[in-house]
Length: 466
Image (cartoon, rainbow, N blue to C red; front, top):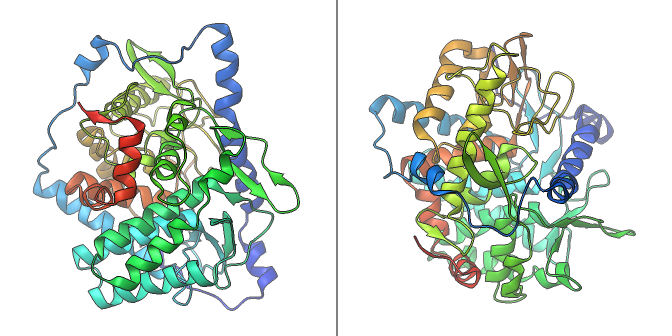
């Protein structure tokens, strides 16, 4: 029987070593962040992609035209309620009650003793507290206490550099773990959670003040002192990482937050600095990256880009096309991996039987081996509701406790080899919960977008209705 994770009393060194694939995972994610720029440069030189370009052709737009928000069946809504409630349990139980920091990942088939927190997981966790309070999973007083605990720790005790936080930290002390970088994108995900709390608990002056203080301390202009392209991160004693956010990816939230800042605002032309490479698959054209599906999902967990476009694209529609393309890509892979079907598809950066892998496509990134990643479909719930719900419901019904645990779906599994992950990962659990709620009610979108920083960011980026 899959069990809920419980904390342990092991020594610090034992607890750090217990995170079995941490160093491999850290390397893989950093390597993943470099791939879009490296590969896209080669393909652009070869003439297989263009920039800048308006988004999709009229043909593609007609095939996947935006539709009104779906009316979910009682069965679908009950399934999503069960999923969200399980996801919330992770963020409630696997956050340290004294710091509010949330674990990067957690074992679900044995007692978990890890102490590695992720600031991105913490951002998802803060958003989960808003959803949990709204849905009655916890009381208002419990939610307020946990939010205040987290914001006070982030403001007063958590080490930072110019307002940016280290990617990974000790869940109890907040101290940097391993050689993790001060991360621009992970700080952005944290800030999205902070701002969601500020708006959801509006009128609670301590939360409003702490959230604003945390945001206004971030020196976005420091990341772009000599360029309009933002840096991936900074390492003490070494300086900036040699990579910049220059190709379409989950970067949109970071640029919009920086442009919406009231204290260290990025220039408006920063929005035009990063490249938008167009891809074509079976006549469907969309802006994308040589990177997994999550790049189309993360920014839109908070930023509501429905019925909006800048001078390049309607990015919500763009993500709908990208998800449909990924679905078709997986069905084509079904010739090699017979587990992939209309009822089972979806690959994005995840655990695998052989460690952490940044896989997906098209074009194929791998080596793909038939593994399925639940958060790939779940993160696109608002984009392709019918197709993604079919996949998620089939996973739970067909594979049961092998792929389902107290916190929802495990991170990944492979029916062909009978491998089922022993972990859940905070950011993948988080994107699942938020996108499920956005599909059901739009709550996170509606709440987050009331923040003046979000509105200002979109305005300065040139977004208009349409």
